[in-house]
Length: 294
Image 1 (cartoon, rainbow, N blue to C red):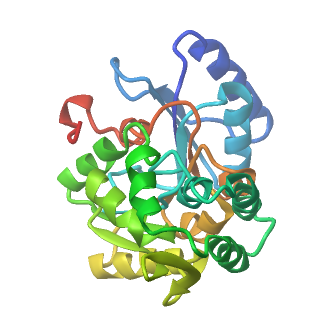
Image 2: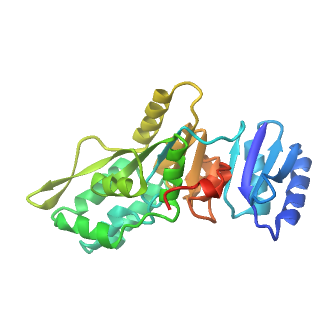
Image 3: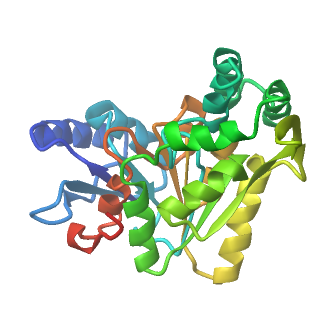
């Protein structure tokens, strides 16, 4: 059984639903149930027999998109673990691009970042290249960048703190840097941070990294490690926007593509395209009066 939830536009709900149900039936995937979670909810739940998630997703996109939604193969429940990317997911910026602006290199570095997030470049090589271009930048630029440029996305803290209030463990895992991620995690409420470390000498960036690189395999490994600690039956949710998030999204029960690049969106079974991050709380059926962290 497939269970899909999506935040529907009330003005178009019935028209869109009628068309979607007709198409699902024509494609051999008739809905067993289609109704709002309750009278006060914006969330539509559609239940279909079988396991053809790709067809259900395509029909939802066709008749309801862009929207916020989630498709699962079992009853949807509040996860026990939430692992998220940072840049362009929990915050609205790419930290290395903003930091590069202080070196007069934003356009050049942002182009490399975009290509890496689209999956066009090897992440490790692209990261080393971008960090190398920052050699000689004063370390003080990091704090200035944090103060002036870096802001959590709407709903980020409410999402994390509300999940924590339900007993959900949280981890921020980023291909970015601890200089930024440690601060962001504290602002939003993450319990664990995994990321890369910029090397600094004599108050300046050297253009190198310290220690192992945190990449797509690291993100998946952290998710699996944290999930194993929680024991059998634990449910995971992961969120990200770029190609380096794909293994983590695919490994989680609920892989959420947040305003994501096409490859990441295609790999996910959940997506946020219209609302802010609290849309996930609605999809998880957590009542608004129980949200915390605002």
